[in-house]
Length: 400
Image 1 (cartoon, rainbow, N blue to C red):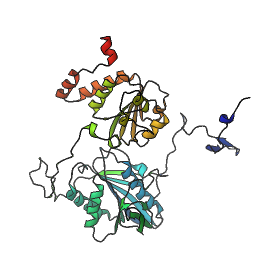
Image 2 (tube, one colour; image 1 turned 45 degrees about the vertical axis):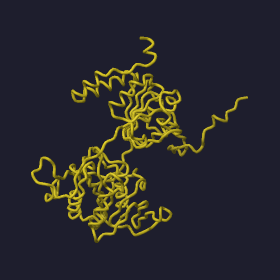
Image 3 (cartoon, one colour; image 1 turned 180 degrees about the vertical axis):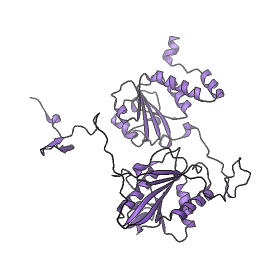
Image 4 (tube, rainbow, N blue to C red; image 1 turned 135 degrees about the vertical axis):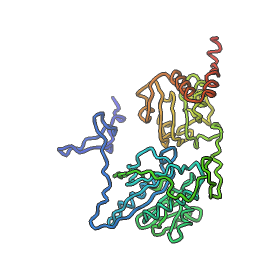
């Protein structure tokens, strides 16, 4: 007698209706090879006899891109603009720093880029003067900023202090066209208010996956307020700002916790030569992670384990070398922005998760990457990198 209990089809699986009205269960949600992705419509802003208005979103970029918090803030502005049925609202995104991506998917209609204002430079007076100039020109009805720790939170509070006639709310965890809410009393209570003029939005408040896109017409604006100087070495005039920019203090990668690392190189069972792997991590200046199998084999310590039973990471770039991609490991990297997989097996689960996959021998690819990095660096660093031999494994030492 055969037990077919495990072979039953779940009736609640996704289905689609055929032309005859019959429901067919969808076996997979992955797009077919010849199937084109559904294009989202551009948000309609044409309303009969509607007034013109702007919602301004201000945020710093990080290496030419917006993080999820900033994207959520733009999406929040787009949702507010879409819910306003009586006014033709334009979502204007003011980006401080370089921008090398299209943020139309977030709902931005116009994008103003000020590339000289990187979050790595502390110049709040100059940034505030230029932001104020944009505000005076656009006269936005609402101003939204991400309440973060890379400059937007500080800059937003300075903006609130300078705009004496405007209402404001910080660390907003709920936003609607008619109200906003923020926690108080150590998070035990929620305070509600009418939607203020300036909103500093908390992270993960808004879903940035919108049913529409914006037109994202981009323009680059150089320093609008010429009365203030940067105080750079190339300028003959001294800065009028009372602050002195000392830059960012960098620390060794090995001292950075995996949960805070921006670039992680992670090893799995497919990495046989740990010494080569460590040389690659050193060349990339990346934090080191590992799968549970590699940790159980004794190749790495338990604090390097990434996955459901280890650590959950949020790196901008996660390089998985020789990792098959079990469900538990994929759970630990679900919040990573870009995943690069190096693996022999092109059908491994990690390949489906990866944004870029390199199929081949892990040792050969790691050696090639080390050489390519050495060639890209200065001659002094290049010579030192090439002259340092890779440590031999015990097996190699015995063979020698």
